[in-house]
Length: 321
Image: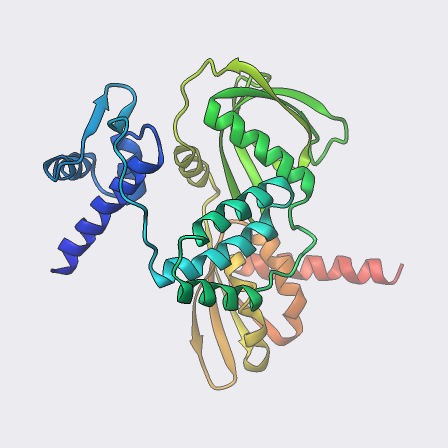
């Protein structure tokens, strides 16, 4: 089987699993998930139907398997089984409280169908996996908010939240229709339609002080979360190229953080490493650069040199007060 045929086979099999795991799914959702055209999804669905899979199609809702049709119990590969251990540790780090407990419970049921040798491999890996907590690790309150949001999104129910902005300590009450949840820069966020602003807004979950899921359903039909994320990325300021030269001995210590500041590539010379970045947030880059400025040099742009010099001057003035 060629790589192209294998990729198609795996996609069709995955679509089959998607149909098994949810009541309805649209061609548009499948197209976005597998990054193929809607016409390709139509052909994949026809291939499943030709293989005898009873698929029902309803306008406005999408595709679903005929009621009562189920596939035999799933057998997991060794690599899939090992991923259970990592998934459970990640859930414990990023989602605390009841949701983590429910996820672990579900994983235990899945692990119950593994072969003996696979169970042993997963057990060994679990004992050697540790996620160190950080200051930004989600709290139990965050987990409660996440659970409420998942309930709201899945059942299309409005929520009411008490929210505190970063520049305002007073709580604001907002009525929302949540669209989706995402994790970015070590924080949980969610996108929602806000009735107070009559527009879509992004909210940070750790700033939600209270949340209540209403019995009232959504009034509006919303686009997918990926649509709003793409829209948000398109609205970002234009990126600027930054080039710095870093002492070779120090350069290795920057590997862990440089990706957060738009690192693109590097060139290695005898005593320095030239690093190239692209970022729209030069002020944040300037503050980060100050951490190792005594062993580095800004090659371009010139205005970044001025920004760093200005910051250094303010640091000096504050230190001698």
